Image (cartoon, rainbow, N blue to C red; front, top):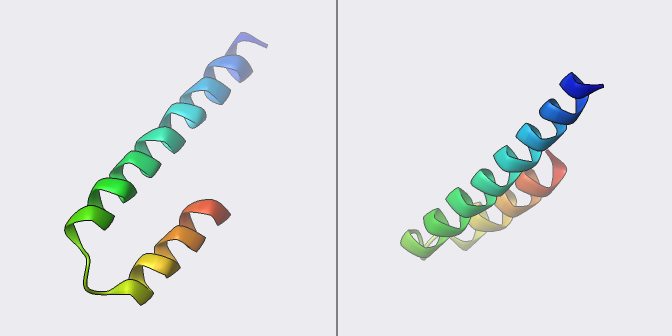
Length: 46
């Protein structure tokens, strides 16, 4: 049970990191809107 809770909180933290990383990348990459859109879909599907 403890292992499950630990894994769950870890994956939530990884999700936050992925979103933060994507947002910072999206700010630097402003030209390719199609790639951004695909990345948003990819992040949400993961």
